[in-house]
Amino acid sequence: MALISNILVGIVAALHAYFLVLEMFFWTKPLGLSTFRMTLEKAQDSAVLAANQGLYNGFLAVGLLYGIFAANAQVSFQFKVFFLLCVIAAGLYGGYSVSPRIIYVQAVPAVIALIFVWLANR
Image (cartoon, rainbow, N blue to C red):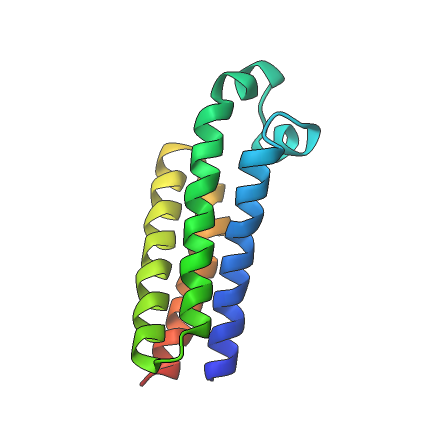
């Protein structure tokens, strides 16, 4: 169960690393424009905000990775729970304020990972 939970947490971390790359480096490029369904003008106007958002996604990814690799089991559990809850909160708010699809892309994988983290530490 611990291996499965770590794989799921790793997937959530990888998603957030991907979000970092999209938001910091591809926001105004064809990949970013199609992913976020916006015009070049809108992307250029919001590029600095997107880069900041990407950086925060990177922090989430690093926190989750630390949770996977922390030597102390209790610290590992606490990091994974805390950062997964942060991802869930961000995904729910993004789903409410930007697009409901963010819930499925961001919050749902984190909820699934959190359930497995919890089960692995019972």
